[in-house]
Image 1 (cartoon, rainbow, N blue to C red):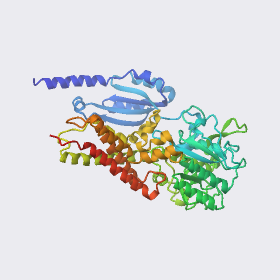
Image 2 (spheres, rainbow, N blue to C red):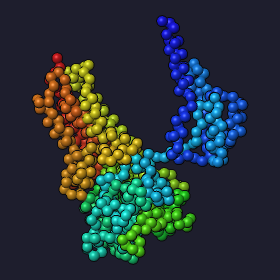
Image 3 (cartoon, one colour):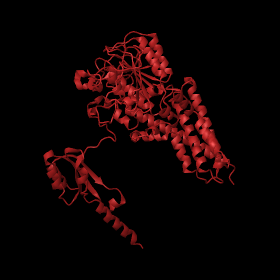
Image 4 (cartoon, one colour):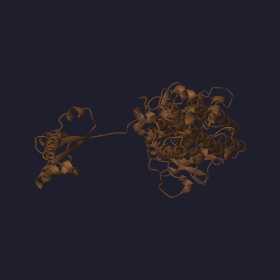
Length: 593
């Protein structure tokens, strides 16, 4: 019997050695790979000076790493190897690989291959859109695409072309003549709308910041690019009253208008983020409406991150975003589709201006809002706190810094998701401990998996999956939203209509878990001597809902219509308390015997 452990170790050693043999099957796998020309990855068993010299003679050693297996099996085998990355002329790569693969001490020799993010748009022009990468869009797309959010483009109108899905362009309005059509007869508005929500991953043209957001086109500027304060003020109010969560105003001027200032304040009270261009004056002095209180003023930077020479700046600037700098070349502008000389056909053009910087921020706001952060103040704060450092310390030029949509989405998903889950678990822990002390749950009784599953889902913890690609799964992107905010996916955001408003008020209250708890208290679902699956699920949902409401109250992340802003946290705290009580009530069975 004492010989058995040694026999097992010997067998494992043989198996371990067998696994280290060269895997010749990788040739087929690498046949269609994106190979980096002239780079070879080599691993040889053992470490000797002559072996290093041999490898160095074959090409330039870019990297060399000594590998030691620290496991028990590795120590018994004295498993030591060295890995090299060689650079050779691309035309010699095949012959060098063939020579290396003749060696008996070779573990593997293979070309270095390129890898990419889990989801990269297949739009042909995306490679030229430096501005989307600079704004952090690729890092945001795994977690959010803007589904369920309406962005109003208050501009020259919007024309849905081949690279802008007509199904996501809502019926707009022309505030110049009062008509219902909002077609673009200039090109500016369509270009702006493309930066916000260009169809992405469709194999056509270019990409956009929030490719699943909807566009509400409101025409306030004529074919020559001019409008008036009265029409713009009306459009701002219209957008806020018709479900737009984000308003994009890539326009401005030097004259102050009380009507416009009042409209901006009105839209913000209605839960909208009003994103405005700082202006193209090239000096200190932010234009209106960006300079009004409640507006999110955006300055513009070029490809190198420095303030563009045309960008206005001043104390009102909140954040900077890519607007282009064509003094560095045509392709240093912002590339999107817009109308051409033939209004029915599109053209891909490079524009520059704070008008082009603004929709990057509007698109980022839509991405964050689609994750359930709906308070304008919370959205703006999130974008500011996750902004990248600017090339120089100047709040007047860059505000909080350079827009990073990917960082904003990750923070919205991870930190708020963790907070909701932690608060839900804390509430459940307190309730379960009290129930055990009251002998309503046996000391050794384990809660069913349905309890914990309901808690995780109802707390909105599934949003933690957003940064790893939940948004890429058709039909499941809505799971990245807190359950209380799911109504927006079916009925629209608050003020999009009575249904959207009712869904928001009901969702962000204790009514759903309370009704479910009342239903499951019926004797039909009781299980003698145990909690039962459905009551367990309902209790978990109640505690998860309580954690979600409590986190929303703490973060101030939710906008609710018809409720004064100062009372929203109180509403949420009351809902959290009632939800927790409903869950606790489901644990209060007759005393266990």
